[in-house]
Length: 69
Image (cartoon, rainbow, N blue to C red; front, side):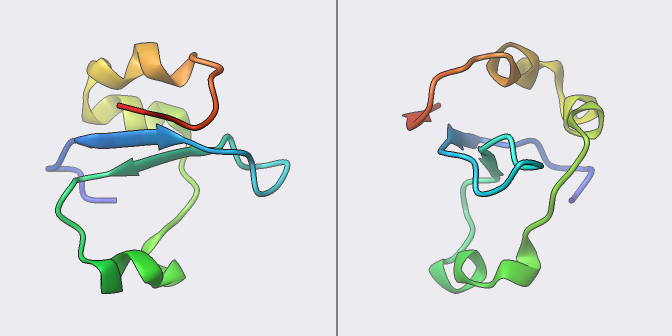
């Protein structure tokens, strides 16, 4: 996770496991090739994500699935 960048594209989908909240955060300029490589993704503590910017705080409590911001 790049600490100098803030997520610009956020969506939530159905969880893929118990440890998965379903949230997906992107900078917004990732290539298709980058997005298809699972090594480019990880699971992060929400506190770390909120340190990138508090604008995400209201979204992380939203319970809707298949929603895009």
